[in-house]
Image (cartoon, rainbow, N blue to C red; front, top):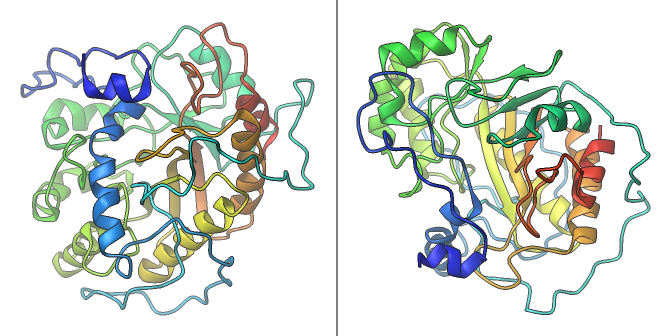
Length: 359
């Protein structure tokens, strides 16, 4: 039995048969799942514990002050910021097997009868499941993506935008690039190239392929790193410096963030990370994956009450950031006691109710 399933106790999803070969048509990207992170992110977490100064950690810090906008960088790295406190690669666990339920804020967790709130920023990541279309409509999402160049069997509800992605090196084909041009006006770059079990690319490899993504003419998001987006000399910093020196276009920066601190401090930790990345690159930010998950300790997931409180307060915080263009929760489907928003029946979880009411 795979170690990931033993760690998380949730069902595995088969990898598409064409995943290891160069596709002859638009590739089907494997769904993004918790267990794909689980085997690799603890290793990143251990490295983060050794390099405390350089890494972005989860321990509780005071909420950072708003960061003044400076001149954009050109081709060189900027000094490391100290504001961020969390990344998508969870640092050493800060919670124990008996997670303490934090006091909820004054913003009450919404009830099921609350109407869905919709804003241009609010979206979700999803893979195909029986209630996908109905759930996209019910949750009040304005946009969604599925880590692929098309939305496959997911029918997009009226008024809900699909944003395609070029997932990795094998996705850069003439057919796939032609396909994304038909999907809309915006394109997400490579998925977690800094992770061996995701697109697993060096900055140089990504830069060599970038002109083909540019040629689509779509508004283009950088590769979405798993962690360390604010770090001088990190994967994203090398890519952005290389893009600037080659004269390549990057229109916005997608980021992933997962917090292992299940207390109310998680909201300020997320805000600090986003502010630090913006201060380095001065590009609009899309938060394309976020949730509370402890990849390196136990419990893996907070209680539904803790996750719901985080959703409510994080959404309010995100809506207050002028440089934050969009955000999307990980993820729309729910499989067990995880971060998902909707069951296969279409019934929202408590977290789904909270995200449904968030604006």
